[in-house]
Image (cartoon, rainbow, N blue to C red; front, side):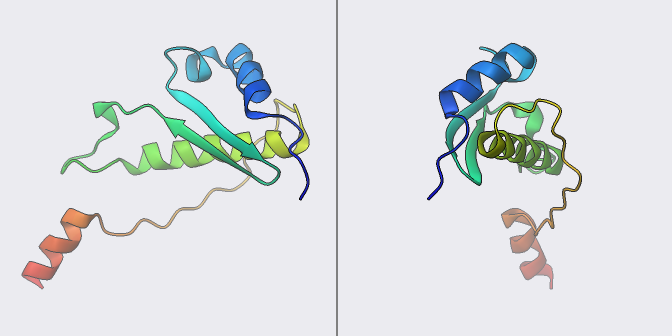
Amino acid sequence: MQSPAMTAEKLSDALRAELPHMFGRDGGYFIEAVRHGGARVRRKYHKTSLRPGGTLSGATMMELADVAMYVAVLGSIGWVPLAVTTNLNINFLLSPLSAISWRMCG
C-alpha cells in the first residue's frame, strides 16, 4: 500500500497556517488520520449545527464531507492548497426521528 504524501501532523500544521479559522485551536476541525486515498476528519460539535428535531443539519454534513475530501486529496498528492472540490453529492436518508414518525403515520 502506498504511503500518504503528507502525514496527519504535517497536514494539520499546514492547514492551521493556511486556514486558522477552520484548523486553528478554536476552529473546530481536527485531522485524526491520513492514508493514501483517505482521511478521517472530526468536526467539533456545536448546537448551531442542529436542525429542528435535533438532527445534524445537511449543510454541516456536506461541509464535513468536503473538508474530509480536501484533506484526503492533499494527503495523497501533497501540498496543493488550491486543489478544489469539483463535485459533491450526498443523498440524505430520513432521520431516525422522521422514520419513526413516518412508520407510525403510514
